[in-house]
Image 1 (tube, rainbow, N blue to C red):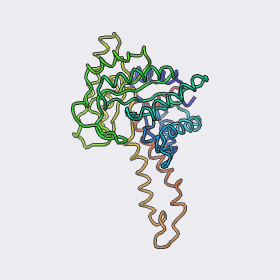
Image 2 (image 1 turned 90 degrees about the vertical axis):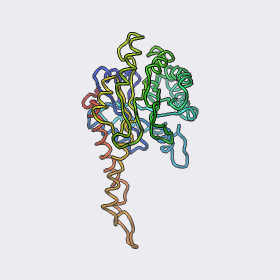
Image 3 (image 1 turned 45 degrees about the vertical axis):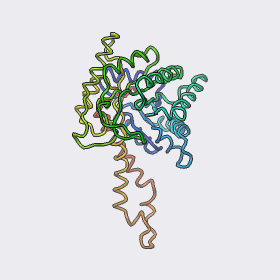
Image 4 (image 1 turned 135 degrees about the horizontal axis):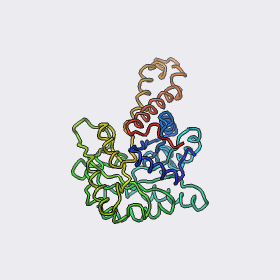
Length: 340
C-alpha cells in the first residue's frame, strides 16, 4: 500500500503529531523528481508526502499543453505504479491553489476524486491546498467552508492558509510585512468557520514569518511561538490540546532549532521545494562543467554520447535530490518512522 488510503493518511498525520515529528512534503515537477523523492523517503525509512503545485502540474502536462489537471492526474497515476516498488507509504498532495485557479485546478481534481469514490476507489489525491492568503480572511473562510465540505465527501483532507507567506512561488508574490504572522484572532475565526475536524479534516498553514525561496540570515524573522499562541487560544476555547494539524511553508534556509520548535507546537507537514530543486540541479551543472567537450559538439567534433545521454546526468540528479530528502527527514525527525 505505497499510496496512502484516506485512513492510512489520517493515521500518518496522527502518528506525526503524537510522536513529535513532521513529514517532508516534497514538490515534484517530473517523473524523475518523483523518483528522487520516493528514493529519499525509502533510504530514510520514512513515509512522506509528494506534492505538485499549479505550475508544476502545468509543466507536467507538457510545455505546449499547459493543462494543470492533465499534469496532476498524470503524476498521480504514474506515482501509483512506481511507488509500489518502494517500502514506504506516501500521500499525494496538491500545493498552493489561489482563488483564480480554483476552477482550473483544485475543484476539477476534487470532482475526479468524487467520481472515483462513488465507484469504490480511493481519491486521486489524498489532500489539496486552498491558498486564500491573497484575499481577505472573511472571503478566505467562506471559500474554505465550501471546499472542506466537498473534500470531506471525496475523502480528501484539505489544507488551507491563513496569513501570508512572503517571497515568490509560481508567480504569486507575498510581501514581507506584518501579515507574515498569523494572529490568535485569525485562528479563532478559522475554527469557527470550518470547525476543528467535525466538518472535515484539514491542515492549517498558519504563518509565523515564513518566506518562499532562500534568503540571507536576518532577512526574515521566524517566530515559531506564534504557532503555540494560536494552538493555545483555540485549544482553550474548544477544550482540545493542539487542535490544529499545522503546516510549515517557506522553510528553506530555516535554522534546525526553529524547525524543531515549530514541530513541537503541532506541525505535521513541512514543504520542501527550493532546497531539493538545487540538490537536483547541482549535480547536472557539475556534470556539464566536467564533461564540456562531451556534451557539446565543439569545433565540429562529435561529442560523447555517454556524456550527453540524459540518463548519465539524470542519475546523479536523482541521487542528489534523494540525499536532500533524507536530510529533510532527519531534520523533521521522521527518519525510521514508516508505518510498514
